[in-house]
Length: 150
Image (tube, rainbow, N blue to C red; front, side, top):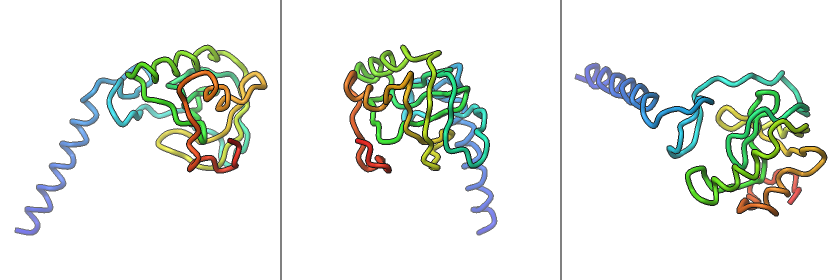
């Protein structure tokens, strides 16, 4: 009986994973479009190991607090933006998208969340987190301001 219960749980978990992957629809980046919590399934380009600074062009903006630099996803440390699908979240994303194609320099903290590296970024010499806090509804997330920048 215990073995049958174990098999049932394994099958149930497998069904949940398949159902999850097929629900909510994925956008062209492989991320759930509008579902919560926002996350992606598509494998991203991996950053070289032990990299501390990532320099390159902003190749994509996922939302107000996640950009891709040379195809590598970076979650902005200490930045808390409203989610896409809300007026404020869509506006923050619009503000961030103006930097697509710009030169970025991200100091990586060594942390990783989901498929993203975590770091503090400047774009064209401007602190991106500070810019977003001053020009959108994004706020400082003090708990994750690991280098006390804000």
